[in-house]
Length: 295
Image 1 (tube, rainbow, N blue to C red):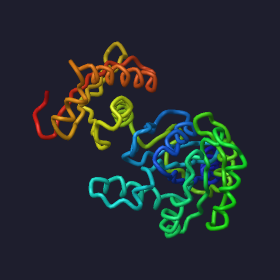
Image 2 (image 1 turned 45 degrees about the vertical axis):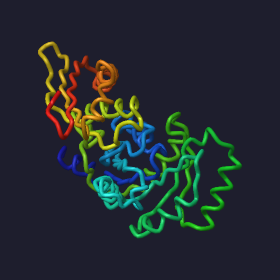
Image 3 (image 1 turned 90 degrees about the vertical axis):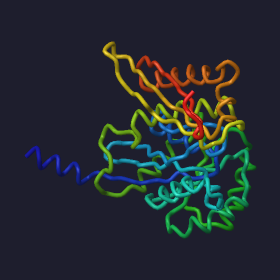
C-alpha cells in the first residue's frame, strides 16, 4: 500500500528546465542564487564571470525547477578562440532547457542586442520571456516604451519586471514557471540545490575574490583548482587551492607587494566559504604560472 502511494506521488511530480540568458552582469547569477536560496553561482561585475553553466535546483511542492545559469550571451556572436569553452557551455544550457528567460539590465536597454541575439535563439524553437532586472532604478514610463518597441518586432511570451538583488517581483516569475511545468520524473534529488559540489563552489569563491580585487589587470580565464578538501577531527575544514595564472607578469600582479593582494584574497574567500558552508575554514592558496614552477 505504501509503495503504491509512493508511486502515485512520483507520478504527480512536475518539472521545468529553464535557461537564464542575457548580457554579462544582467543579473542572471544573482537571480539564480535568490531563487535557490543559496549562493551557488559567482556574481561579479567583471566581464564573463560565469565560465561554466551552473545548475540551480528549486523544489516547490510537487514541482522541480532546474535553472541553467549560462555565460553572457555575447558569446553567440563572438568567434575568439579563447572563448570557445564559454560558447559551448552557453549552447549546452540552451539546448537542454524547455524555456528561455532573457534578462536585460533595465538601466542599459539596448535593442540592438535583441536584433543580434534573437534570430539565433529563435532557431531553438523555445518560448522566450524577457525579464527586465533592476527595474527599481528606472522610471516605469521608460520601461513601458521599450516593451512596446520590443513587442512590435519580436514574439515574446511574457514580460517580467524584477529586482533580483532586492528580491522584488520574484513571486510572479515563480508562479509563471510553476504554470509552465509539465509532469515528469525529477532530474535531481529532493535535497539537492545544485549540480556543483562544495569543491566547485569553494573554488568559485576564490575566483570571485580575485576578480573583485584585481578587475581588468588579470585575464578572465584564471583557473582555481583544489588540492585538499578535508574535514578535520575538530569539525573544521582545511582547503588547499592552486591559482593557475597565464604567466609571471600576471602572477606578480596577483601576489601584490609583499604578498598583500593574495593575502586579502585568501582572507575574504576564507570568510565567504565559512559563511556558505557554515563551518570554520582554513584556506591555503598557492599561485602558479602556467609557464613556470610553483612559487
